[in-house]
Image 1 (cartoon, rainbow, N blue to C red):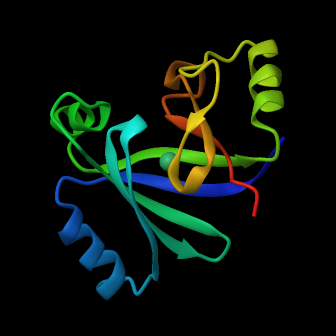
Image 2: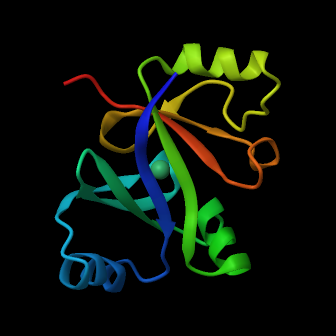
Image 3: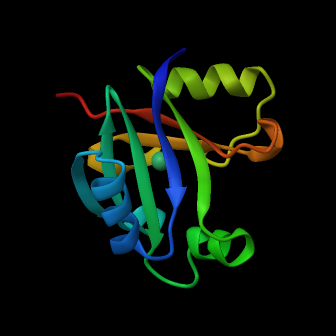
Length: 135
Ligand code: CO
């Protein structure tokens, strides 16, 4: 069902400072930047092999990521598993009793389709499924 760790999502309060750190200190190539309105974030991707680090910063104080930052501060926000067929994956997980935050996929970064699982069902780890856009 899962084919790779697609990315780790890191919540940041200061996106420009975080970009500078990942690019200049960690030497990771920045490959994409996008406002993902549906998730209320400005997001950037850095390549690590076939996977990514995704930095996310909130578009406004009412967004989920702003609430996360207010409560827990900057840091690891979610882990994303790559799937070939997100509907099939959601059906399989529902069948297994896993709670979903998104019953149906929504649009994620770079035209991907994504859905989040409830952390109560994943040992406290906010987990995202990602079906990349077809190339
Ligand atoms: Co993500």
